[in-house]
Length: 475
Image 1 (spheres, rainbow, N blue to C red):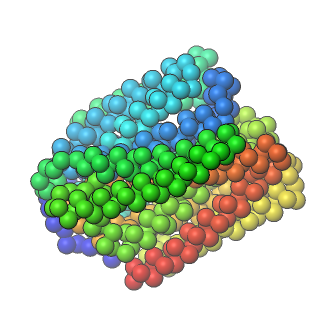
Image 2 (image 1 turned 90 degrees about the vertical axis):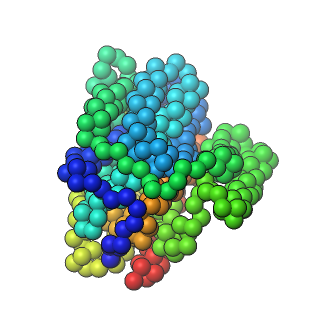
Image 3 (image 1 turned 180 degrees about the vertical axis):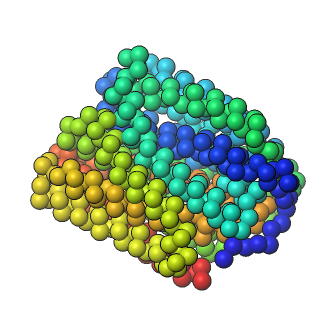
């Protein structure tokens, strides 16, 4: 299945000798960046209380990082291709470490949100270099293994964020409370910076250096902000007319931006979004599956924490540990995904989606039956099954989307793919968070969580249908 016809610059023997150490270093950074999307979730009640912030502000603490991360990923990938992937990785890792310190020192919600934006911008500079480095330095079976590990790290970090955040809040080092969830990034950031300076080898794209498409970048950025802002802030404002106008304007701005990108391409210049990548049907359809898959995952993690802490009254540590079975299931199944695909064909991903759907349905049924007296053991079991289903899907999905992409386009492709992942997470948090908060205000946390799960069930159904179309196309 792997396309062996590689073009562009090949890894030198010295790079090949370091590739697995390099993978370890860049995956540590990947773990940190994804962790920071979710580590804040378990800290939301403490941040809200400590900074006297609103529900909308704490949603922005989560999504501001994700949005900044998303809209600059393509630029980060392009800069890495042209200016050097190691160089951009180091700049991004340094900025991320500094921004983490600023987050921990923020005295008000507005400054915390601003520091989270800086964190997201820094992550966008370093994370595209990860997939690009894997595409450049690994081929054949080893690339499949590396991508499988990468997918596993993403899923593990998504779950570990909740658990690590719970432990950090429980320990309350130096009485700093929620601030420690940001300060813990600093030592790991320093380790990653030093490690990358030692083991990473520089690589570039063979394509000539071109000017960045600032208008394309701006249109996509503005369009995303116009889309997500009303989804987060509209509820607290009572859904006035400007929220609907903003959503309509978002569609218009993004559409005009894509038209402009086609114009840039016709003029022989390089657009912000490399539209030629969408000539691959697997790439296009895979992005739609990615949208449904990651928005559901992020939305679940967000509302589950709110339900556990504010609905059931669990401590941050206890709520974080609820994600442990989910993380175990994800890690185990993602590591086995390649073997399962080899043994049972790519259709094994269908069973991953079905497992997620059945688990969601079972949890909805338990909430109708037991309410706040929900059995913890049954909840842990269902989280294990949800994680196992998610883990079976992630690595094959990544490989199916990327396997026909040319090496010289790896930076642009990985940037678009990771951008879609982050946009999906921001939308999932905004939509499911909005449903949860709206229902919680009027019907309580049990009903809010249960009905949010119906939205999650719809997204899971979309994932299953999308995977069926994608695998059928892939044959």
